[in-house]
Image (cartoon, rainbow, N blue to C red; front, side, top):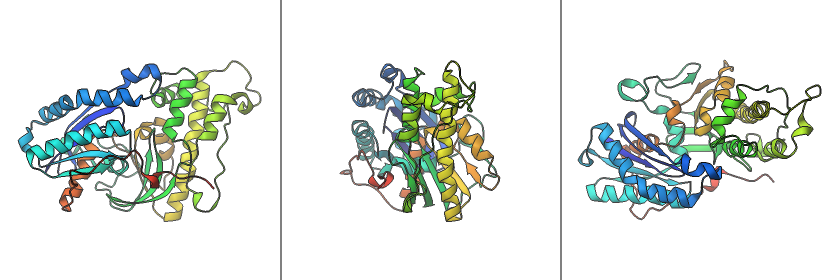
Length: 358
């Protein structure tokens, strides 16, 4: 089954053609970063306008790269939630129109579930599009049998969950305030690093000393919050209270690379603490990650140090927003006989993916 997947939840205008829920025939991502860089963050109005300008061309290129025409498409999918409402509506409306015109089934997909599906995708000949196998730490189960622990880390979400099927997840932990990717972007913006912040903090940290600053870890210990995370306190410490956390004997000029390294170390350790609690509590040692922060080199290297965990990451090009993950998970819905009505609409939030600390 050939599925067209469209992703427009934020500032990436993306479309992909995927065969039988696994093999990527094409995966086109048109980035809007140059248009948002001067604002050091995504401007929703600009994002939705660019999606409107680009969506037709991006889909056309995805079809061309795959060697397909609209007549070859057996089903269409688009992200419907969560995300920027205006951006979501562009991709969703285009997908509905395409499905209606070709008389093929349509499915409205959840962005979070799609990210958690990304590690199951392969390029032609069982490889990703850049020629390498799915990146991993430890042994990679080829077909990723359920259940496993899902780690979704991005600019908008930080979720640790038990994944029992492609559309069946139990949230074990989530952020009570800022997402981890959001903290990366705000710290980078404060210290004048380039946008998007996560990429540049990762790079700057390689040239810094992560022992210069000892930033605080959040204290989440009440009841069901053992697997939750918080980044508001860390962000405040790095941005507004830096000198309070400088280690004794480390006086001197402030090096942005040292700040980046110390911040990144603490941000990842916050994740690992919650993730290990989830793994131990559930008895599940397979971790499957997704989302933009899953591309972070320090996170990958730290997880690789845990011999008892089987940690699986998508290829780097499938960590960020992309249409392949949407097309891939849509295939599973179609095989089950599911389809969405054309009345399906977008939703900016999914309440289960974020909660407050009492």
